[in-house]
Image (cartoon, rainbow, N blue to C red; front, side, top):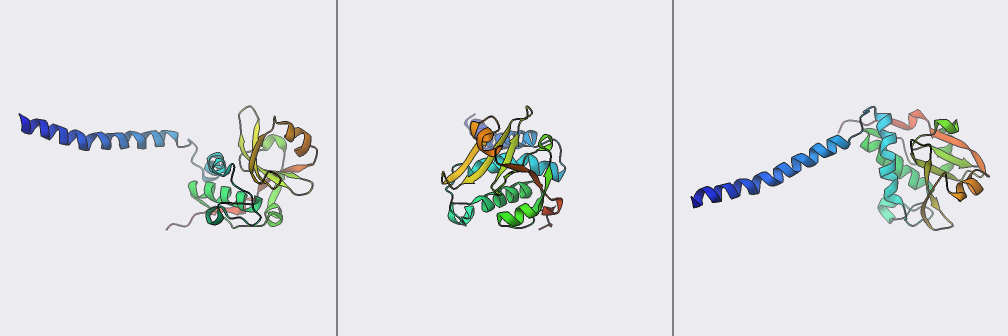
Length: 184
């Protein structure tokens, strides 16, 4: 009788973690976006990647992985690279802001999606990191004034009073900025 109890305990010690990990895998699979087209997945991964940088110190030339700080060019590069990797794509390369903006095209306000940029007349840009079904947009950028990565939304007074007052347009990175990842 004792041997059977010990055997049952050993089976439970083995089975419970195995079952728990099985349910975690099933839950992760359930949370995977339904549309598996890489470009769609890229947009869907932007919010979770972007949110990792909120509050990061802003330093010109800062590289998040190396220095724990960022500037706008490195912030956008890091978000695009992270989302591309998760979507099975490769983001072309790091580019200073002027070159990045040269690799975008203008889009209409009603066509904005995750990963698009709002650009001001002085070429300051913020990334639209999430568009809600209601149309409310959430933005992220490296604020030199606040010295940290900052977020705001399209219902915030700063959006109306500053961003729209100095608005140049909404822009999307060109298709050739994302390429299929090479198999390892």
